[in-house]
Image (cartoon, rainbow, N blue to C red; front, side, top):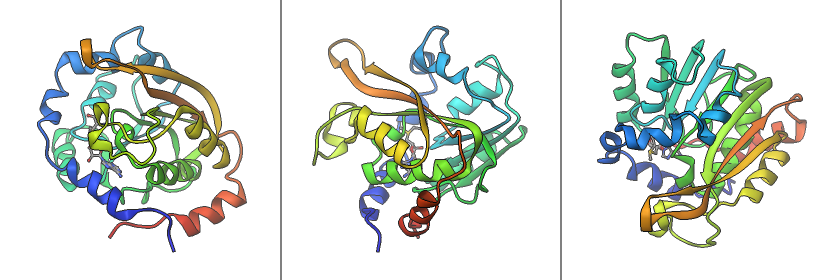
Length: 239
Ligand SMILES: C[S@@+](CC[C@H](N)C(=O)[O-])C[C@H]1O[C@@H](n2cnc3c(N)ncnc32)[C@H](O)[C@@H]1O
């Protein structure tokens, strides 16, 4: 038995198979909030050890391109990109064919086939904000598995507290999640919450205060046996 609503997770993944978003998001004004000096994203990213970096939900790879160009101030060692959609994986394999980057399609719920304790940094920008709460829980538990001790994970997630809502009808297509619920899940999974920053999103009249949150987590101890057992039972694979 799984408590994960696979149909919803699949539905959200399907909505991102193709979108004008991918081209628009490559433009400077949509990259700036993540990569300009002085932004919360840039300051938090600087706290990651990029020896072995995993980007979740990479889309067409606009953030990986920034990292590989050294925009963050540090050059990555090994880099793994993941996305649930085949088209995005194919796009990134082509885009980064000359870089030392691996691009994998994942289940939509976990980081397999990434081995346990092999990653020093995980980041996910502009994607988890749309994920269903049970999918977020699954990724947080699996974060505990793949991070090395001392490794950190930086997640841009929703702080939109609208129980029962449908993500695509919410402002900026945010799914239900809150800063505190996210911190609670992370701690239950065996991770430390290093920092959480609430973020406004959108421009002009579309701006919504504190609709998002940027959370930096760290694994400071071995994966608790309780988390390992839950991973065995809870994490289900999408076919
Ligand atoms: C709005 S796009 C953002 C892409 C990229 N992070 C960026 O900022 O350009 C959302 C991404 O999440 C991916 N996605 C959707 N559901 C997912 C899931 N359950 N697991 C992993 N990736 C997922 C989509 O394929 C898409 O690449």
